[in-house]
Amino acid sequence: MVEEKLLVRLSGAVADVLNELVRRGYFATKSDAVRAGILRLGENFGIFRSSMHYWRELGEEIKRTGKRMTHEEIVEALKRLEQEA
Amino acid sequence: MSKRPERAYLDSMIFIFGRLEECNSRLVLFLAELGEFEVVTSELVVGEVEMFFRENFSREAGYLARKFVEGLSSSIVRRSDMKAEMDMLKGKIKERDLENVAAVKHESLEYLVAYDRDYGEADVKEYITPKEFVKLFKLRPYDEEY
Image (cartoon, rainbow over all chains, first blue to last red; front, side, top):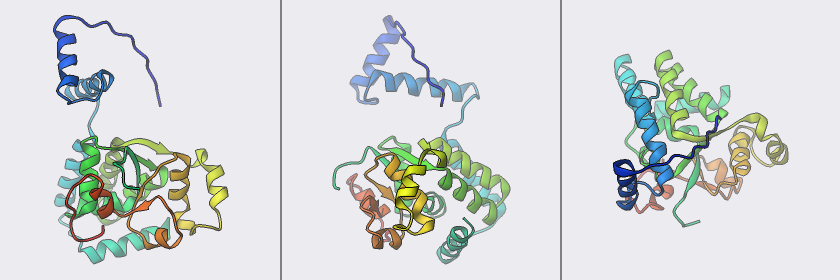
């Protein structure tokens, strides 16, 4: 996993927004807010897709296949999977 | 084991039931999405979830399921990183549960969220069902354990 350490000086509106995000409890720390902001930028520019994106896409793909599994079928498939693994 | 978890290991079945049924596993995934706790998985979980959706739905579903698990996980434990734990547990835990328990030990986690009686019978103290896990967040769970 790649790691980056940044020292960023913020002032004015950017600093105000960051402080407010933490003060309102949206993020536990300023670092958390900055991390989330970078991911949001990545999503906006199509560099990164969130897990929620894949959750929705998977749901759509399951619908598209037209297959439905009952609870019992899922349990059976899980058993097969364990044996294969 | 009653405090609110910060990190937890999720077994493959959490992702599978969570995507396919309205159940406690889905609540566990939503809590993770909301950032209520950090998800830890392993190469085994990523592979099993992908294989399940590929074999039962489509190749594309398998790919999307893999991306979902990878995206939600803050840490994916590699087999090569937990050799010591696996050697230590060999013979004490059923072969098919070995990798999950080894990953939990390797990451020093308090919770292994799964629905598998074998963990209970093997006295894996980190084992917790999705229903009990959801309760730790003061949510009202579904009746079913999974």
